[in-house]
Length: 114
Length: 114
Image (cartoon, rainbow over all chains, first blue to last red; front, side, top):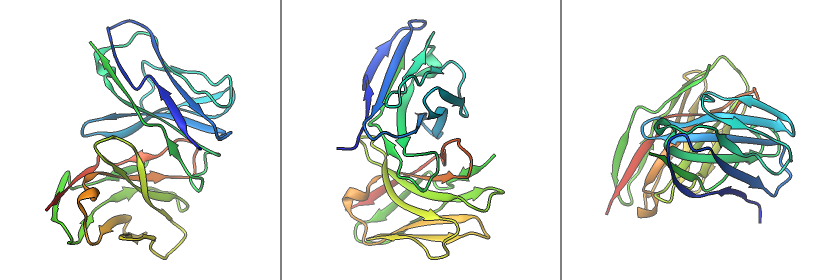
């Protein structure tokens, strides 16, 4: 079954404690990205990756890091989380960055920073 | 930069009736895709319908159809014979020619009255 898997799905953490949200896809997709969803703001892209070792900033990259060492994985790293990073996070993947390809979303990760 | 505007934060419709959700966008590109996503309380992102800008024919998926007005940069979603299961947040999204991701509107919360 084609899927994008995010972990953890729910996390409460404290300010400043580094955390990583993992994202894995089983479709051999080249393109992967991270979004955050906040009330009244819709989804906004944080980072994206065109392929292994190729990443770039989206609209709201401040406070986040990513890496793409393997094609299937695209972890989102919060080096020093702050309360304003409390949000619902989505990982997404598609065959390429062209929007004619189907986009697959993960189920979302709820992150609360206290 | 592209922008997507959903001017209706909330809409309410009686079960079995028809409702139209509005979306306008701004772009200088000629080749792009437009999407409507449904997000039920589970927060899963579900693709409702996709429209390719170069196709003049409006996309249709069962009870869901769009009115795509390219010159006016308008992309409304019509839901016919509304059902209780249609209750959700609906996001309009734009995907252009660049490698960056989708640009989402802020969403419309659709309520279905039994």
